[in-house]
Length: 128
Image 1 (cartoon, helix red, strand yellow):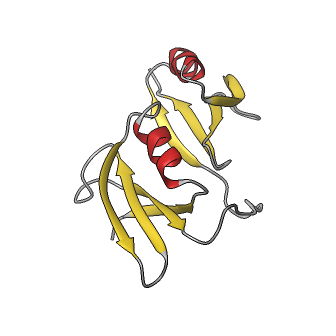
Image 2 (cartoon, one colour):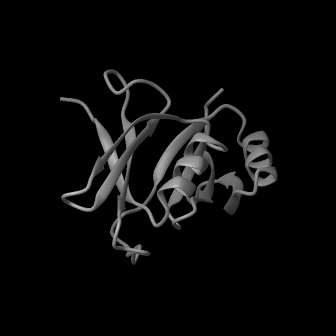
C-alpha cells in the first residue's frame, strides 16, 4: 500500500490552483469536471501520481465556504531553507501564520502558511 492523495475542499478552485502551483511550486497534474455531481477535481503535486502522493482540490459548485473544523490538522512540506522559503512566500503575498522556529517541545524547525481557503500548510526544515 501507499498514500495516493489528500483531499481538501476549496472555496475558489482557480485561486487555489494558482496558490499551489504558484508560490508553492506544485504542478497541476489533472483536472476533471463532474457536472452530474456539480463538482470539479484538480490534482496538484511535485511529481506524477504514479510515484508521488498529491493533493486533490475539490470544488463543489454550490458551496462558497466551509467550516474548517478542528479534526483535520494540516499538509506538510519539506523545505531546504525555511527562512528563505518563508521570505519568498511572504513576498508572493502568502500569509505566514507561524514564523520559522523550533516546534514546541522539540528541535525541528517549522513554520506554517495558510492557503486561500484557510487550510494550514506546515513547512519543515530539512535536517542537515
